[in-house]
Length: 192
Image (cartoon, rainbow, N blue to C red; front, side, top):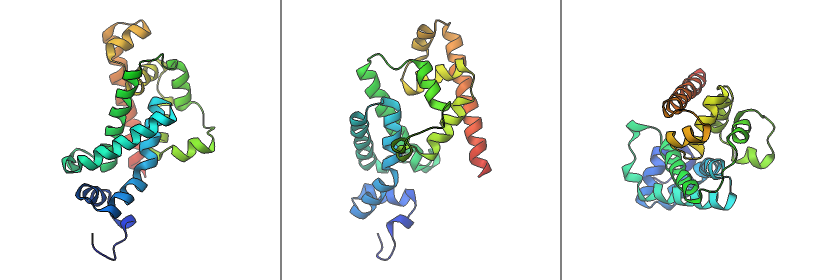
């Protein structure tokens, strides 16, 4: 990294390349830039602060180990890193497989309330707020299916069993809900 260039002025891609090459300043800047979003996503999925910290640390470690595998044609650095985080969090939930929160409770929390405490605001990312708002606009059936599949790592078959609906209906609810989320979040992102 050139002297005189401040790390906070570098692009996400440059910081990731520096992280992968062992540049300590780039690594520190990369972690500062993404740690809240990574931790916030992990906490949203697993609901346990200690486990979310472990997941966040593992996600950042994997980003370091696999920095060369990042392909900008497939998405932004943030999307790549948050996908790693989500996959680790879903795997952790699957391992625990304890009785998850009731889908209605999670769905209500996901979009129905704007009242958040200071701790929640500290870890909530802009993207997370957009998704929660968009999720709150979905019909209840689609919202429940998405919460079960995306946040609790349930398969479409498991969603069908939990909801008492045919497998095809569960798949349709998940697919249609995700398409509507993508349309809402994509529209709001393009308005900026």
